[in-house]
Amino acid sequence: MLQIDNLHAEIASENGGGKKILDGLTLTVNAGEVHAIMGPNGAGKSTLAYVLGGRPGYEVTEGSVIFRGQDLLAMDPHERAAAGLFLGFQYPVEIPGVSNIQFLREALNAQRRARGEEAMTGGDFLKLAKEKAGLLKLDMEMLKRNVNVGFSGGEKKRAEMVQMGILDPAFAVLDETDSGLDIDALRVVGDGINAIMRNPEKGVLLITHYQRLLDVVQPDRVSILSKGRIVKTGGPELATDLEREGYDAVMADA
Ligand code: ADP
Ligand code: MG
Ligand code: MG
Image 1: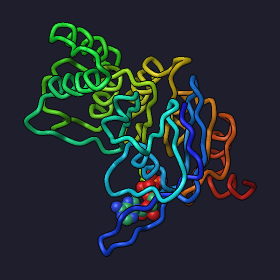
Image 2: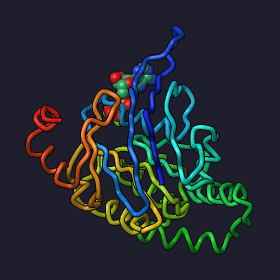
Image 3: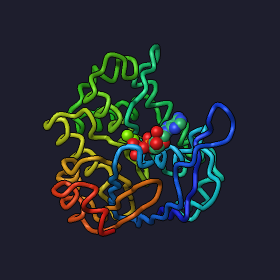
Image 4: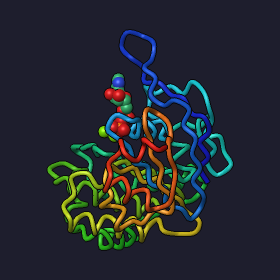
């Protein structure tokens, strides 16, 4: 489903030239899999998410990414989304002046049009939004407010998962979706990820610092990212080893 091969990427710096962040990253995620990426701060986890999303300012200097048989790096961010890629970010943006409902409906219909499908009507959309808000235990009133404005950290993450539910992507890259969540919100968000994405035809790249989200969204594979490359891949036990022994100890025998 997602095949990353020998990916090298730089962040453009102000004085020209780039700062090398990803350094030969190779990783495959098959349909039906949740693949967790763990790694120390500064390893390049968010950079990987940004590069997959096609964010400006990141330059791929070598390597390839094949997404559902297509050359992902040749697509612009909207084409990536229309092809079924969803990105959840560590710091969701606020959009004053635009209600969540408007934003979500436009996001969905932009993707539908790009796929040559008809836009969803207001009534059908509201039904869909209610269903997904219920799944994430987010009050519909929150969706009438401006996007993320005045939302708590947990509400932003739940609103983002409502968005994921509405878009129904084939593949989700979730960057530290657990950051800033208390135990109850972590359970709701984790259950939401399972409900929306646990499907033999879907895949998830779950980027996280901690084991706790992985207790709810149980990964099939776990990889450790360090200094821009994958240094170790294993089963779910790798995450528990990390939690118990720390990165240095686990990576020492990588
Ligand atoms: P992680 O998500 O694993 O903590 P990041 O991908 O955010 O790591 O960062 C990887 C490296 O890139 C770090 O050394 C960080 O300092 C650096 N970095 C991130 N963003 C920028 C930027 N805009 N300009 C320069 N360096 C950056
Ligand atoms: Mg970080
Ligand atoms: Mg990060």
